[in-house]
Length: 243
Image (cartoon, rainbow, N blue to C red; front, side, top):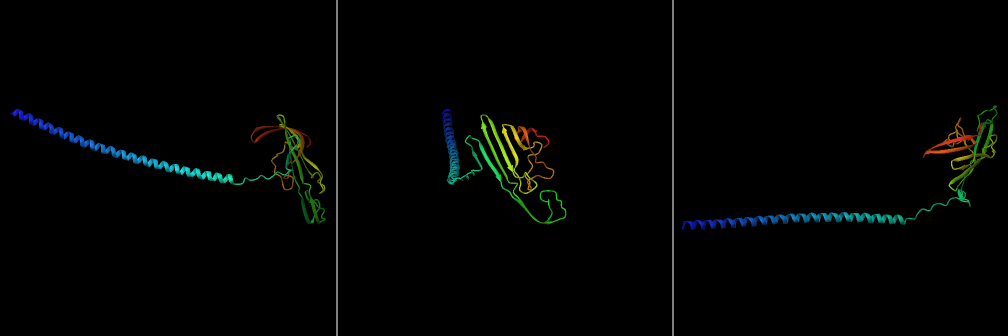
């Protein structure tokens, strides 16, 4: 009888323990499900925020593109500047295909001297003491020129002719003077131009010449130039002596 009661008590305790374990397991399962649901909701909210942010970025990009398109359309709608037609005397092409450019200027110089001495215009001043009013004027510094160049096969042929009227220094009438007259063939030059022994970077002076002691000699010569770099050239020339 006691053995039966002990067994019955054991069975009852076992059932109680089993029921308790099942209840705890169910509670844990319910808690775990709630946690998973909470995490899923957080992830969904994060995805919604990311999608919203992407939409805002796309809208901003679309607005920028629309503004750029409007600006581009406005630029295209603006009238294009019309280039001024070149003067017919500035440059033209010959029937043979040569490019010809005419240039020059007309210049006049004048001075009025009150009680001045003679030989004091463009010269070292010297006087015998006699003075009188005088007006002097000249246009001998007027300059005319012509440049031309044309391709001949794979070669380049060109030239320059430039004159003024400063050949005479004894009066204001002047006489025709050749400044430059030469032909070029590729890197070769044949004719009269500035001496290779003088700087070709001397500025144009107001008095038509250069500073005292500076050289402006233009002489007949044969010259060859070789380009060493973008801004450096080597010149070798044979020039007229006693020039």
